[in-house]
Amino acid sequence: MVSSHAQKPARRRGSAAEEARFAIEQADADGVARTAMTLRMTLRDVSELKRDPKVAMADINYGPDGMRYLGVAVDQGGVTQSTLDRGDTSYVRGAAAEAPAAKPKATRKKAVKKVAAAEPVE
Image (cartoon, rainbow, N blue to C red; front, top):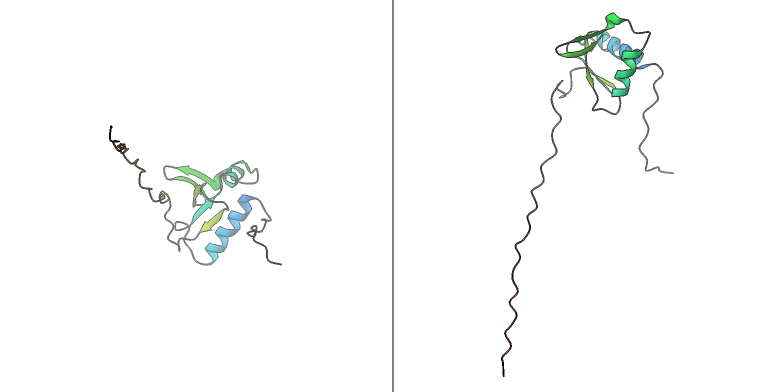
């Protein structure tokens, strides 16, 4: 039986902080620099990360370039599932998403006066 519904992503096993820490540690082990990484998180996961009592205050930093978790920049919102961008994609941190192509403005046709055929008068 073929289902036309998209598969749901697998439920995560830990909190947002635990999942992010695991992904960062995996990338570190693979030799990726933390300055190249970007945590792209849902607004809900960012909120959960900020409120998690298990997260040390030293793990989250705020600066002029935004929020950082464990030294990795955090982009908030704009995604449906939190992921770690390792810097090997075309994603550019802080860049605005491409705007959809502008539709041509609809214009109304000018009304054309109908000229009634003149009937001959007898």
